[in-house]
Length: 454
Image (cartoon, rainbow, N blue to C red; front, side, top):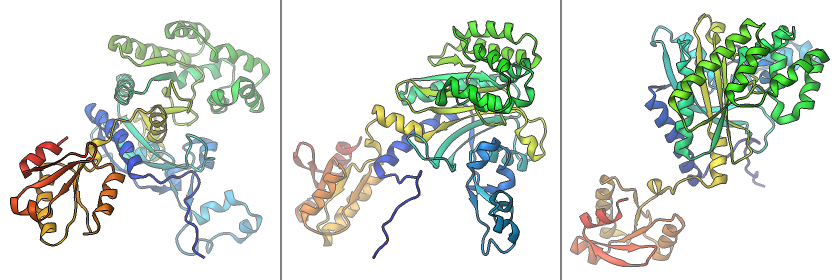
């Protein structure tokens, strides 16, 4: 009995119709990246585990897909560890590589390896798939595409502002109504400092980052489980629940964090960014959100998240400033900032809201019916002229019954069918059939090209 075909959970096939839509997203995002001076790179799907492990925090490490070593991968494994089923201890003996979790850490590795070949500040974009061993659910996949844009080698907050401009332009072109949430990890460090819990900054940010998903009560329980006192938890509450305008929140933070040098630096950076944005007068809604923490350990400054206002799907873009990500690979004091557009979630939002334009530019505009013999050769020559004019067209490959060929054209939504039999061949014309109206007329090749051009 033949095996029923399937794909792994959390992955998807994409039909031609879906790919046309996805390419619309990629092309739109890419065009904006290029407008702001960013250049493309690509990195391998797999990286050495030494590159990936320890860069995403304990929870991130658990979501890494590990690749078994080639050949007899158990040959060098410690038999005692295998007997104990101590997977965490034996993994380094049976797996040296993993699928990339994101595009940022591989980018940092790329910068260090190629530092003598690139000019700083280095502005790059990258559109490739990533993999995470997460539990599949709506809007969350194990394989998905990211569209990343980063600049490294500059501390200027103008880079943060430029990324916000890119967000504004991308979502304006895609016609998605969004809000950009903005925070700064230095502010979160300042909060940890004033409650005398600087050593627990990672625990605090990971917990706060879950506020939207699990609610305030569960966040407080997680903070308590990490060793924070009730007094410290009570001190945090009014800070992360600040309300009012962005300027109101900044003013309140200046009072609350006055005793924290790093906290005040974060507030200063936020204010500089807001001042720039006031000058630009973007349409994009920007909200200072103290609950935004971004769980990844490498962020050190500004952090961003973008959410669609009209669809409940979580963030569709996120990123931030990382002051020394390249330092873990030996290149110290190279600051960077970047954001990642989640193409798959953007696709789901646009599909649900029916925001995709008609894909006429990717569809076949005309199909030649195949009558075989000399008629086929004549149709092939005309088809060549049509394609040279930049028109998507095709010739049915088999000289089968007309009904089958017409059904093919109907199913593909091809607007024009062209008939070139002996009569047309002798007169050096074709019969043009409009599939929507049913009207037919004989036209010359130049007239044909003029009619069916988009």
